[in-house]
Image 1 (cartoon, one colour):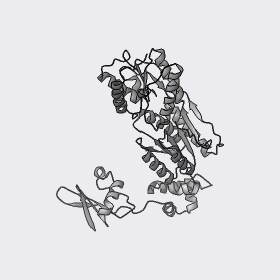
Image 2 (cartoon, one colour):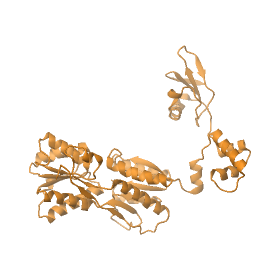
Image 3 (cartoon, helix red, strand yellow):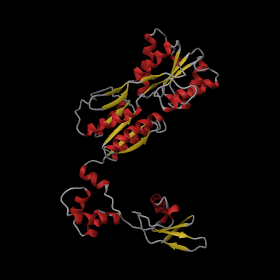
Image 4 (cartoon, rainbow, N blue to C red):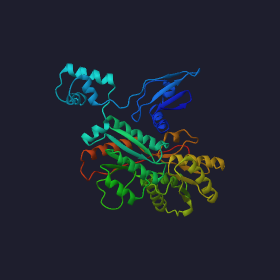
Length: 398
């Protein structure tokens, strides 16, 4: 056998260089555990603890295969069917036999194969969740609402982060499809509708959060969303009542369905109030603090006449507050700022942020409930759930 030395540890086995990365993934706690036995399904490997004086303490070879139901049956002296009945809590099994099987299961460290179970039941008890930005508190709260209810119902969630990249989003959805997830929750998708349509047609059950499909007959695709147009109208109306007439809009990503709804609400409200909007007052930006910061610097440099800003989300609004501080624009005396979402940060910044509160965890919980209804053959005309935002008035726009 060839040896590969890693610090004070030596890895021995066939083709060690080819197997080293795989082995270390499985044994990522090797440096903490020293020379403990380790399971590697790819090769028989010995882990050698090389002491300071150069002596080598070689462990016994690791196991080559995982414990199977057959191993349990053989050790317990029963049939595979009996072991299966005990594991699945089905059928009549003699109490003493059940006790003996459970003891063997514990001794061998047997764990049922999720893959085998899914082949038999045609379900994996897994849900795919795709979100644009895992670091955004808005999506973190939605994720928590999803995970809590899913776990309570016996499902596990595969969380995928797209980094606001439609190409990455497409790849992640395809990967979840290959993993046979029972259903998919797609949050604030940035994909073009034609691409999204083809993807959704191949998945067993889908719920969209803050996204609608406009073309074709998509009544069977459940959605849970916020009334973004109404939220924008509430925010802009508040700014108008507070005396603002020249109101800018930091509109977020161009591909955002929520951003498009808020833009519609912004224009409709300004028009209803009899105010003409300068097209230069509306700019897209990344939905982050830095995105809001840079967009505000540029917007206020070009349009010093602006009296207020309505922002795509609270992160963008916080960036706007930072930019105003740098430009020595006093909030709210020189410029009022309103955000959207009411994440915890909104109440912590100075000045505190006026915003539209969105029931984020409710969005997640309702999406899971809708998905589970779909998996239980809910009728094709499942209702579309729309939640209403609520204005929260604070210091940035009293």
